[in-house]
Length: 239
Image (tube, rainbow, N blue to C red; front, side, top):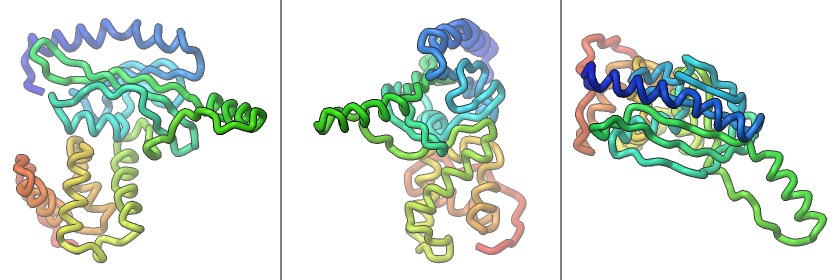
């Protein structure tokens, strides 16, 4: 963010005004609903208000990979409404993410609503079985989403998910183009928007921090994105 005092005051006012909205929405839908208010000015602890306990988040917690993706999109981000996700515990969630903008149009946060529709899906399956018809399902979730209060666990889950998509191939089994694609994809998902992410990705992949910075720089150069800040610490670890 730009650190403009007037804009910061405006953003603070918007966040403050949404506090009662968070509580009100959650109270309206009951225990199956969770509402989370994010302030992206603090990505590692973006949760500033939460009501409900669907994903177990608390104030001071981190955003999910959905939030990281919105953060990576910057001011081009748009609301994502009524999409399905699944938690690692198997809960099926119907979710909406609504971005928050200040008077200049800058995205600085999001209001997120998660509704646990697992019971609805199970009830539909029972009714479909009794009726003998195909039934109208709730649709398929796009994939498992990691929700947690620790941003490190979210980053690790995204890296691991991308590794699984490559049929559990290790870093050494990837060609140069595949390695660059991995870093480009992680960058698009907003992984590198948080502090220490490059170091964490390097450790997860078993490569040196210098190599990770190098691949990120090359991936961004290929897309015309700004290069990451120069890193003075080259540990000479395995590439």
